[in-house]
Every structure is written in C-alpha cells, then in structure tokens.
Length: 431
Image 1 (cartoon, one colour):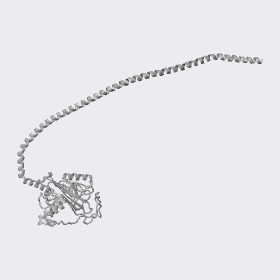
Image 2 (tube, helix red, strand yellow):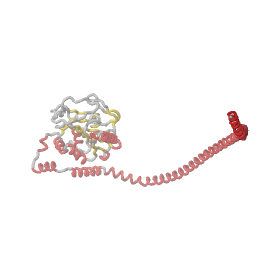
Image 3 (cartoon, rainbow, N blue to C red):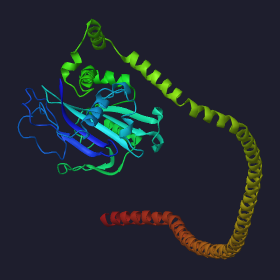
Image 4 (cartoon, rainbow, N blue to C red):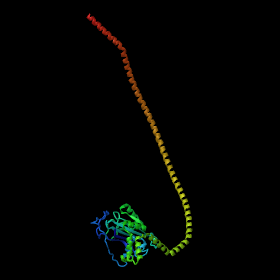
C-alpha cells in the first residue's frame, strides 16, 4: 500500500491562481518504516540520518472559499483517475482545460511511498494545447501520463520540466527548474532518454486512459479507490454520503459500480460527449462547410494555375540547369585542356633539356671511353714489355742450362779419367 508523500505542480492552475512550481511536502513526520528497502542516493544528495519515516498520516489545508482546495483535488484526481467524466465537482468536461494557458505545458506529479518498504514511485500527468492555442475543441488538448521510480538519475525535484535543472539541492520553496519550459514532446524525449540511460528508473509513458489505469493497478495504486474518493468529494460532503442509499436500487447501483469494469461505458460516454460537442457546433460547421464548398472551385483553379506555373518553372529551371551544366562542363573542359597544354609544353621543355643533357653526357662518355682505351693499350704494352723481358731472361737461363747439360758428359768423362789416372798413379807408387 502506498501513501502520498509529495505533490509537485508546475505551470498549471486557474488564470488567477497559478501554480508556477509548487511542492507540497508531507515526508518524514509519520511512523518509521518497518522494513526499509535498500536505496542508493544521488551523487549530490545528503546521506539519510536515521531510518526512513512514513509521510504525514493526515493533514489540514486551511483556505477560504475559492482558495483552490477543489482545484488541488481536481489536479490530483486527473493523475490517478483520468477522463473528463471523473472530473471532481460535476460533469463539466472542460474544467481541467481551463487550468492551462496557451503557452503552458502543465505538470502534476505525485510521489507515493510504500508503507512497509519505504520505496517511492512518482506518477504524473503532462498536458498542453496543440499548436499553442487555446481551443474549444477537446481534440486539441493533449495529455499524457508517466511513472518512474526515483533514484540516481532523476527524482521529483529534478523532473525535466525546464531546459535545465539545478543539480545541487535548492533552498526550500525555491524551484529547481531553470531556463525555458519544455514542450510535451521535449519532456517525453528527455524522460525516455533518461530511462534508457538509467534502467533502474522503470520509466513508463502512456497516452491512453485504459492503459494508464491498468498500469496504476500494476503499480499497486488502484484507481477504484480514488473513484470512491472523487465521489466522496464531489459535493465536498462526508464519506458517509457515498454510502447513503435510500432504497434497494441505490444500493444495487453502488454495488454494480464497485464490481463492474466501467472502461466500456466510459468509452461510450466519451463518444457521446464527442457527438454532443459536434452537434453543438453544427451551425459553425455548416457555415464552415458552405465557405469551404464556395472556396473549393476557386482553390481548384488556383491549384491548376499553380501546377501550370510550377510545370513552366520546372521546364525553365530544367533548361537553365542544363545550360548551366553545359557551361560548367565547357568551362571545366577548357580549364582542363589549358592545363593539359601547359603540362605538355612543360614536358616538351623538360624533354629538350633532357636531350641536350643526354648529348653532353654522350660526348663526355665518348671522351672517357677513348681515354680508357688509350690507358688500357698503354697498360697492355707495358705488360707485354715486361712479359717479353721475362721471357728473354727465361730463354737466357734455358740456354745456359742447356749448355751446362751439354758439358756435363765431358765433365763426367774428365772426372772419370782423372779418377783412373789417380788410381793408376797410386798403383804405380805402390808398385
């Protein structure tokens, strides 16, 4: 079960009593939460001191008649019990639309705290006029509902209702919203993007009454309880007035309303209300139809002339475009050809210089080749002369060796004769 912890109203309310950015804080004055759930605080948030406490079990709002008590209840019921048939204070279908100016993007956000775990959930409603213009047509009144679980990334104080939000806590009673008010689309985009960045927020966005009622049931906030509260406060009477029945039929109606799903009948009532609104505007719509029928022929002629003019303009624009394209191509081709001619002239000059340089290199190479041939011949001649002298020396030595070999036999014969003579002499001396 949940208890209402805080209420934030931003840029909404009657013209004479606007809620610029108002927060009704009921936190921290009730009994301690019996089984507090673990929670992670924001980066700039102070550490909690002591166990969390439940919101105020009861409160009294002292205002004079016309001070805004019913307006506050209507705004709260617009979040928890959507639909014009659930408007507090009667069957006026446009009472909530009177609380929104042309440039407004009104917000009503309710923070609920669980009685056992202390966990909080924020449910809210955002509404604005389409086209930034107040109208009697209910279809131009856009409204949507959202919910998320406060935590790191976003809470009730840091709702992206404006272009920037103060990160650090502001003074009590001061608004944390800075800059221009966001539109409904801008608020939805920031809310959804924040939900993607911080999955723990469990952001939900709904634009259909039935789906929003179902989502409230999933959160544990039964819309049926608020329907009883609406009926009890319909004429600012007591709760006993809700169960004051005169006969059996009244009790049967009360029982059927309690156990019967009213979504189908609510849809039928909305459809009947829409038809009644259209019938009320029948004279206006008939005049508008006559004006439209009278203007249709002229508009057709204007449209046909405009089409012919657009066709002529298209033909002229096509021809002009083709001419400009051709001119650009010719200019580009001329520029390209002039560039090529300059490049070829530069290459021809470079080739002529290269040819002259090659001719000079050829002459220098011919002189070097002749000098090398001369030096090679000189070296060959010197080598030949050295080889001839060496061969002459070898010939002389060979001739000397040959002559020596020829005289060797005579020398040997002389030595043999000398040996015989010595032996003969020795023999003669012995004899």
